[in-house]
Amino acid sequence: ATHTIVTIVGSLRKESFSLKLANALAKLAPASLKLDVTTLESISFFNQDLEANPPADWLAFREKLQKSNGVLFVTPEYNRSIPGVLKNAIDVASRPYGKSSFLGKPIGIVGNAPGALGGVSAVKHLQNILPGIAGPILGQPEIYLNGIGDAFDDKGQLTKESVQKLLQQYLDAFAAFIEKQNR
Ligand code: FNR
Image (cartoon, rainbow, N blue to C red; front, side, top):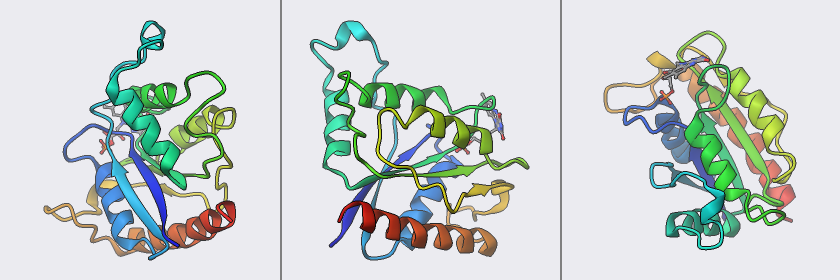
């Protein structure tokens, strides 16, 4: 069976390396996984005042997650944490209290950065945020793609072989994890 994976991009930037990575992952994914690359520009700011009458964009995002077989985060690091837009989307999906749309969903996290540390602090923060509101997180293998700035050609295609190899390895492990969690 094909498993649908909501693949959440943590950057709104048009030329985002995270977005390009998400697209590369979608292409490289085995037939058992359908990666639905999802950007966050349509998600309005979380505000508890709106909870009684939630905006349509919140409801659509929550429903997409609920219908999925898992979630893959592809995110950069902003100031040693996750970008605010990503935290906002997680806050939106976590509500109503006790009814998180991530509940039971197996989670993968792909860190990346043009710099040397590959987004490791952002990944570690996600690993702190998610356990109370989501399913199990794939902890092995870890993936922190450093020096991501030279991995793509000017059409946004992934050309760096070392990165392709790491993505393939991660996808193999993630596919097995998703298979097991959806049995
Ligand atoms: C950054 N960047 C960054 N990089 C990093 O490795 N660690 C960090 O803490 C930060 N902090 C940070 C804060 C802010 C506000 C910005 C705008 C940027 C650099 C960041 O990794 C780089 O801009 C990436 O290209 C952003 O990811 P996308 O948009 O390419 O996916």
